Image (cartoon, rainbow, N blue to C red; front, side):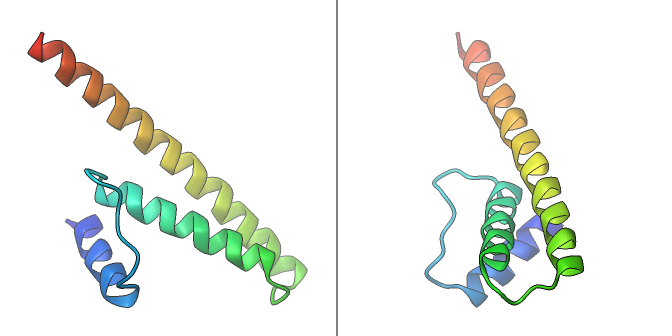
Length: 84
C-alpha cells in the first residue's frame, strides 16, 4: 500500500513521468530514485560528505531495484509454467 501511495505522489509531482507498462509500483519508485540520485551526483551542488551519502543511497537503491526485478522475473516464469 505504501508503494501505491508513493507512486500516486510521484505522478502528481511529475505528470509527464509514467511507469512502464505492467511495472510494479515499487520498481517505478526505485527507477525514479536512481535517476534522482544520478542527477544529484552529476550536479555540482554536493559537498564530499553529501556526495558519499548519495552514492551510498544510489548503491542501495540499485540493489533494491535488481532484487525487485529478479522477483518479477521469477513470478513471470512461475506464471508461465503454471499456464503450460
